[in-house]
Length: 319
Ligand SMILES: [Zn+2]
Image (cartoon, rainbow, N blue to C red; front, side, top):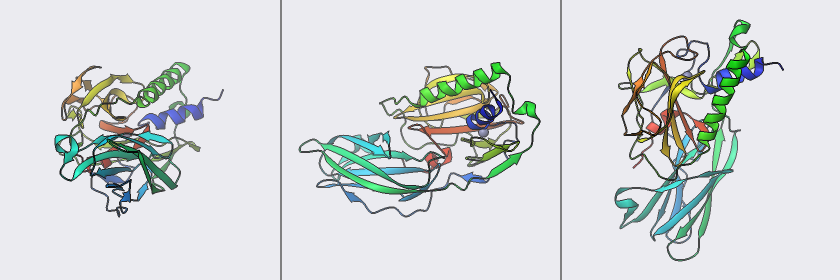
């Protein structure tokens, strides 16, 4: 078996590889997208579904909103073929004189082919029949940077033990991301995990190693000195806290409802699996563990299995 393509995929797919981690991709900011919101769609009587943009790039993140004058007991939703979770939003459980507000993330994987996809929902009012409705969302290409690297073969060929370890870790992460904790553990807005930093780089960057295409870079890299404290982007539960082959010392937080954030290359980890962490809690320190050339923080966001640009969640008006 020729191991090189598999390794190249793993090397670039999970996290940073051997290239300089910070300077090659476009800098991305945690600023709100200026897109046109689509008009609300009626969902039975007295209810409407809307979304904050009708067009989104690969790796983007949208917020859907359902408002209903009458009480709603549940909302089932599918984005293309993926189930997504609505939560009841706002103060006092989202019920006010205006009725109820429900929200959901609509995550676009960074490799989802461009095209039109349906967001279909079915809400169950407290009284009466379930009411279905749907919206169409247009996905455009992410225009990610591509870089071609010529590296010595030993950097893209693992030994069998390294390959087995990297594959097993990737499989574990996939299984974790496929698990949806039914409670919403976060409350309010998400923050960038480093203090005083608002921009990062490299999300979605494609790499070609020795002429072979490899998987895209799935997180945002932030420049930071070794030892800088790394904070939880929001409240959640620690589901992984250990060294990984590519990501080095890694913390993974489950925020509930299929939302996970990952913090990689740490020099120290200060939490353990099972810990409940508050928003802003210190998870560890910036470092250069795993396959990197210098200290930085790799921050990943996966929602409902889709790899999205973590900076996008920071700018969403979550209540
Ligand atoms: Zn990275």
